[in-house]
Picture: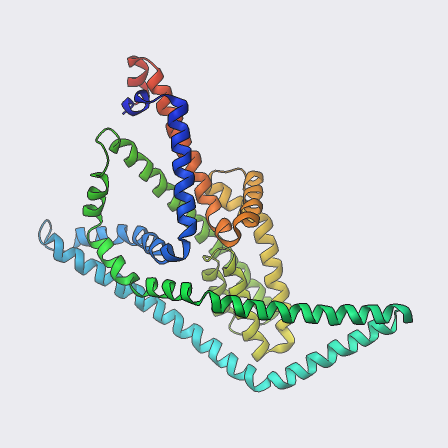
Length: 369
């Protein structure tokens, strides 16, 4: 196992490894929109493979018809997944559609009342200011309105420019079921074909690195699921205290949306705010405050602690990594910084351990295996 590490000098090998990892990550970042559906397919395959293997093993007759049983297990898994998604989507869409219809009927009065309240508040605030400051404040408000309008126009133009890339992402998701089916059906064959491209001396180490990546990915998924459960629980309790309608559905939406990094909490809070605003507008402010408090507590306490526990990274380091990754790469940085850092740390430990074994004598190598 250690012949690969004794074949190359340590500095040259480490520099080549680091440069290769950096280049690989850079290519992935450039192609992020194209590979997004397939990356999602890999994650889904990772989650479904244990259930499919278990189902294939327990289907009669034992030890026969492995191929047909594999196909049947995959199709059954797809059917269960579609039934779950369909049932959840039905209740969610029904609640959102009903709330949206009520909101559309009441939106003229809501807007007029909101504009009137804002106007009264602004008039009262300006009335308290000295005369010489009123013109400056009024001009600042006009400039802010122009800036907001320009930002909206820029966002619309950016969406038009990004339309071709969006179409490629949609096409990728359209073929995702077929990609996932063949990936699950021929996973072992694909794995053997992948390892066949590498020298025999490198395959054991590559196998161990793949196992490290799978382990980190599993820990990351468990951390996101734990965050979703916690957010769903506190959302449900808060919505019950407020007396908001559809509390079970809205809290379930919040928990599932938590699985979407960065944008998920805002999507869940936005859905809850729209539904409550349409049905019980007097409670909308409290619902918005509830999800804002949950978001602040989550980002400051839950995310660093839970992700650091599952990723085995100190919470202080995790906070710094999240801030830096969000500043450098935005959404993708926040999404990938945890699992990527944990993966690099584990691979570094693996390389260091085998360098130490390579430098040791035969007795120490046997003891370290």
